[in-house]
Picture 1: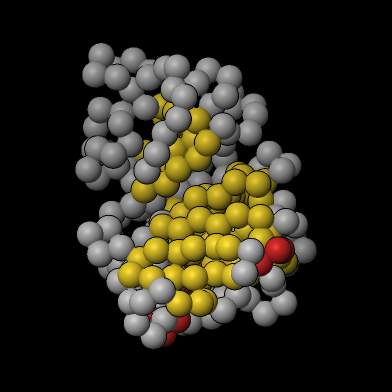
Picture 2: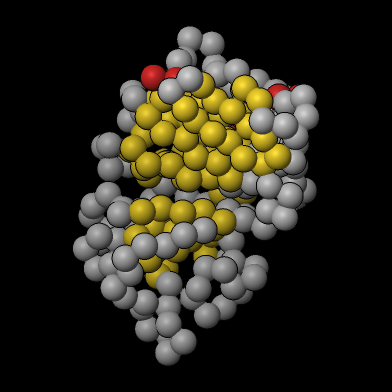
Length: 231
């Protein structure tokens, strides 16, 4: 962002500074100065395994693989509150614990080992090997166009992708569907899905991708031997 907000996690807690309302809600901070941010009730810094942030959202991953989200989602064209992943429909200043439904009604999402997110959606990999997504403009990889999912929803992974991704990333412009990237450890290619209005998917077109594809070179062949990707 041109007006960034920074989030810091330490053994003593969670802190923020910089432009307000860029990642977490304006009500969560009192100024642009370095300051402490309250954690979810019952969660300590020691209980956090990792954090990740994108434009309009901050996520905490616990050691049990639960996910807590607080976000401003100051974007247009998406159902912003869906990024909370707990069924919410209204933006607020609360922490939200992401839910999923495995056939018995919504319950806390667990087992998350990797996560990335933007204001438009979140992308999680579970220790079981399952892939989940939620947010205001997300894709499932099942051939259907992007839509809003306000709890974590099971995705269809790329064909032949039989292992946990080496790395995942997401991207989304204002009003655009989320774009998903997953680095395959077997063939070192990048699988891609979702929004592509600016050609950000790297497949040689600007058409939305509803079934998984791979990032391609200028010669329209799969990009290979990828070590790392950043977004």
